[in-house]
Amino acid sequence: MFIEAGFENIYVSGYGQSFLPPMRNTSLIDSTHPKILLYMEAIK
Image (cartoon, rainbow, N blue to C red):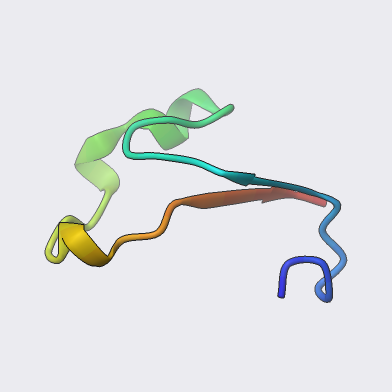
């Protein structure tokens, strides 16, 4: 889906991991259902 939307650099990420420091702020992550979360990042 990312490729179809025009994204070229796609990365599987993890909790508290990101190339961008603001995205590492775990207080902003909804952890209501932690076993079903999928972390991905894409750069267009």
